[in-house]
Amino acid sequence: MPIHICSTCGTSYPDSPEPPAHCRICEDERQFVPASGQAWTTPEKLASGRVNAWRLLETDLFEIHTQPQFAIGQRALLLRTAQGNILWDCIALLDDATEALIRGLGGLSAIAISHPHYYTCMQDWARRFDCPVHLHAADSEWIMRPDPALRQWHGETLEIVQGVTLLRLGGHFPGGTVLHWAAGAEERGAILSGDILQVAADLNRVAFLWSYPNMMPLSAATVRRIADTMAAWKFDRIYGAFPGRQVTSGGARAVEQSAGRFIELLKSYQA
Ligand SMILES: [Zn+2]
Ligand SMILES: [Zn+2]
Image 1: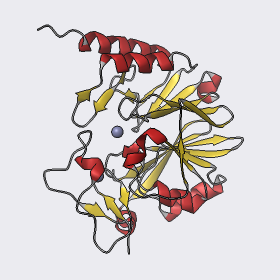
Image 2: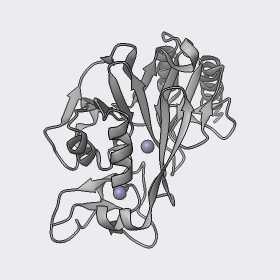
Image 3: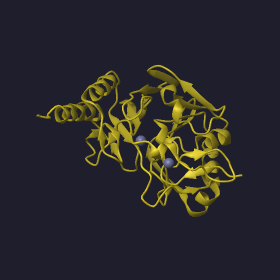
Image 4: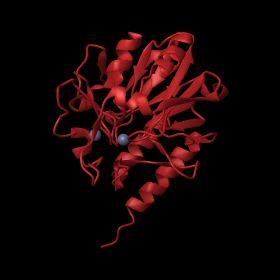
């Protein structure tokens, strides 16, 4: 029996003769069911029509992106460290070429994921590379395929290897997490941000939303708390969820200025 993958969000559901009736992730107000209705695919079908493209973003950081684009269209990032490779965020397609290339780079020591929209086929990646997946426990209700490899962490920070720390920011999801890489950006520090700080079309701005496809804001208090949390960390570069979306330098200033403008707009309502 195949596992089933939602064609809109990429979330995988347990193997069963027929696909589930619903995708809970897409029926949540932060996502959407397309007008054409709920659709499903399988790993085999996905691999037959698509490939993963690789790009070196800076020393020790690769982007892996499925082409033609699938579901939400996010990239996964492969971060190399002296203590092993870490996959940041996940994508549904794990084909033989991707597996062989990652094995050639030394395999994976851990997977960490920003929020449930990118859980995708994390269980299959974890089994293939025999590594744990770090998820924030505040989002456990969105795990659709329980697996022994999934490790739920609690609290505000988790250092997974030296110089690589998960920071819980919340916002888009209560357990929304970014990854701080101290050695990134030539030792100035980098943030891998997923959708939690969303790098905007103006590459000197980030956005803080409850729902991106449905364009729903967070509260001013939440935006302030996120910016204050980030202010305690040293970083200069931000890698967002999508290809081409990175704040190359001045990342800390971009977060603070973007948050200030968001709060100004959110508070500007006049009755
Ligand atoms: Zn879905
Ligand atoms: Zn999201």
